[in-house]
Image (cartoon, rainbow, N blue to C red; front, side, top):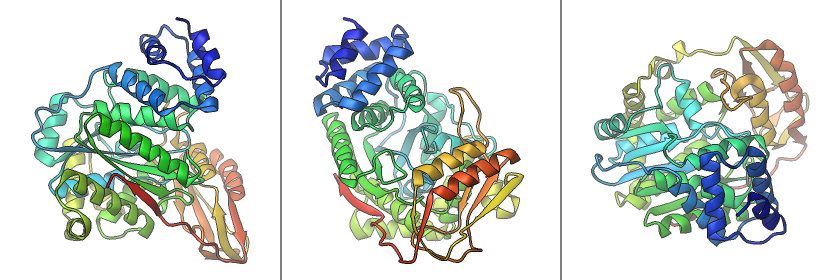
Length: 434
């Protein structure tokens, strides 16, 4: 069997067999297949797609490429969640402590930034001292004592995905349902959680633009998960507008803390509550209005915020900045982007906004590069808001002053204005499995 033949076969739009997919995954894992051929097959898959059977086979081969997490030391039902990625999509530091405060144990494995979207691990590591590389024993101990822990995917869990994940980010091969589903579900299955809650994004700031395509991805991932014996559910949520008001690692953690303290942008709160309710439903703890009431109580009482602090501190983090807004660090350079027009913000190219955030230093420029945790954007005005020429729409933050102007110029082109107020899509388009 040769990679050349697999590339040629998929280039012609033919389905790969389970054996061919397994050959590919094993070769990627061992390093026997060069990046050039891996990238070629990934591009062919993006152009010609995979059917459900191929996507399932790819998921299972990637799962088999490494070990699965041993959560036997954590009694009871364990839950996990995952978002397909967006801009300002910092729901994990809100959702995880909230459901943990409701009595659901969360053993979550997360990734770093991919494409124009942020990564949960980068966001958590923006809290000084936070460790996301934990031993199995430490991980279990924190989940048992606190109720939740979030760690980075290790090299032993789905090593094939770790290589493919990074390569897709650099070869423009992110936007494909089969590749997205297999990447997400192989990691989620390897994490060994009983409950898996998915947030599938669509719109200008998501990898999937059409809501029905996002719905189909959600259905595919739920089918894969249920076939593996897990309880899986999904919401389909809009990413036509950045979620919340913060875009950037530290800025999003500050916003998450504020949400847990009662200062919540309505759109982000709606998504977080839906995810929490879905997890509680799948776990059999509460459903419907009972679940929403329980969530509201944990937010209003401060229990959810305290749980976030407990989790981060157990992982070595210093939560002073989250607890005390006066202590928060901000990048040394900032710029205000003015509207320059009268009327309404008619649309925002959210993918472009995410890329502009990366231009300010919050994204890696190499596989092992560093990030500026303080870089990012404050979204002051959003789609549907009325503006005057002198109104500030976005504030740019960076530690490198020369990055401000290029990002600002690109941001201007990402925002469209109109005399008429636009009709906004619903924040949550639909659900699957809950």
